[in-house]
Image (cartoon, rainbow, N blue to C red):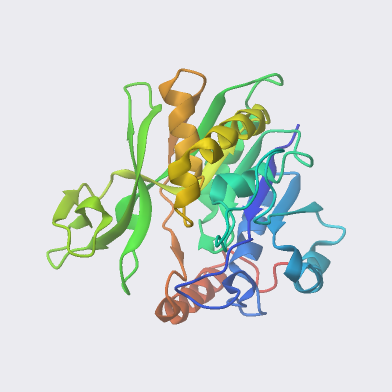
Length: 307
């Protein structure tokens, strides 16, 4: 069974501004996700699923889905703040949904095969799709609890225009993930090394990290049993008063994965890639991203018109 590509497209780009998922950056107005989907198809993925907000469904269908008709199977699902398990309600004053793993949960009814989760606004490059696509395609048909993440080398994932957030990962001698700690302020230093701010604070001390340290770019590989585990743990998450009182608390993918690997329910292989990430974390990143895509087209990595 061919794996599915699951794109997280429900969030607004708060630092970038506007619906950056729909920003045309290629020579014919292609979005970053167009390149991800093109690469995924080359890597053997058979279906594309997006999780979006219901309020821009019409624009999304017109601007995005229409171009894929007849080329690959496509489906939509929707994330909303009130998509909660029975018996739970939205806390007064909360304004945003519940984070990346909540978004993943929205795909439960439409994804029944191994799948790869990615962000829509990150340019992952083809090698990353080849690596995760092969892992998912090689899984036994009844595989459960055998997950993976693409571990980008942190030095290949930085922005010249500010700090970035990355899940810094550690793995055991079998290449399985042991921890993934979210660091929200990572940057290149004047001497060319890489470091993050301690405790994710603006004035935190800079802590060095190896340039080749694997980091999560939210490129995960799961089997469908992941939905069931997530559904149960989301109830625990919502039952914690601290997560209800904090109106910005989020149910992140690394939180779920850490729980499953720490209790021995699942393993998560860290897959190395030589791919160099780029994207539009900040609006100032846009010109460089446009230029890099143009260079890839010029080099023949991508056709001038994708679809």
